[in-house]
Length: 180
Image (cartoon, rainbow, N blue to C red; front, side, top):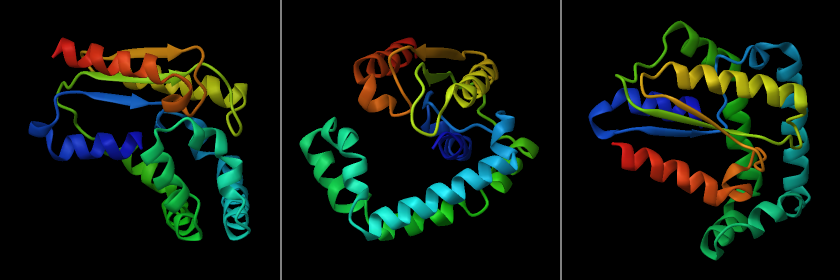
């Protein structure tokens, strides 16, 4: 999400007043370029496809779905755990490292936009302590690239910040909007 949001903001700067990036992937995180990450993505993708085919993917994410408003939860149950979704995710992962490398070589210009980068403070499945630390360092770096950058670590949030620290995240969005 984070790289796509930054690219969209750079493509239409007149339509964007500021960004809040939530526990984003970032090309400044060297871990994302390591072969071990590609292997983990492939294994995760195979497991996701298998779980979707068996109808188990929704069960694996039931705590996430339960934390959503009823309409969003219904949408997730209908569309978020399907084999079609896993195909889309697979296409997204096909050249993730190449896409991130392209951002290193040609970073999107954000024209001085205020950028708040929110990091999760807790580990979660797929984000052990070593990964969490490196991701957080890359988030701090990203915030420093903006003249009005802010890096915030939400200590009680895991990678699913929206469901584990929704109120704190909303406060960061409010803070950015008020500062404009």
